Length: 289
Image (cartoon, rainbow, N blue to C red):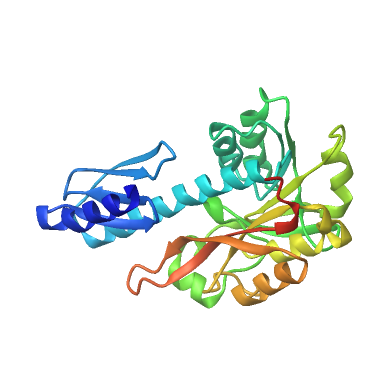
């Protein structure tokens, strides 16, 4: 009955000059031009409040912000449902993801990996007062050793060069430099990361700008220990040599993970096509509730 009433309200609001962005069952964003945009997420008690603007481009930005909110909300629920007690934060940058986890109430261990020295220093400072947040100054990949990373691309530093499409989309790819970094395999750092956890239930978050599948392959047989993962998959390739979205998802599914959510990260302004998704996956048989 409550759901029906909610649906009727959403259908009536446009006649009153109110814009409705229907996000999911029980979740919608309502707004008026130039005013604050507000979302009530079903019975969860969660709200989203963002300043509204007046053109289509800004509305698309708002939609992406709503998708990011929903992704974070969804991941928080997955961590609780699957009893996650250690999150591997690969491609940590300045610690944004880990800080969002803490704000959402996650109290387990976080192990962050960030290879760029200047960025790592900011990450280290962010984690210094959190006793269960470990940080490591290295990248993860399929092979151990050293490699060259492209830097000065803000949050888009990558071990891969930009594709022709990427160079056309982002001016930052035409600038920047390179640095030598250390690369470890995931299976070589797992024991240290999980040390002291009696019943480890790890979750793997990857945001490595086209390098996620290499990180995953570096887990070897120990990938089977992870109850879930989060990977940035790309329908449109920003980096030369990065896998197609279907290739990445097929590799994850082949190791027993199933999709629970897909959230757009960026879109082409002119066409609306999604450039990258955050893909959240789990091993269904490992759910604790």
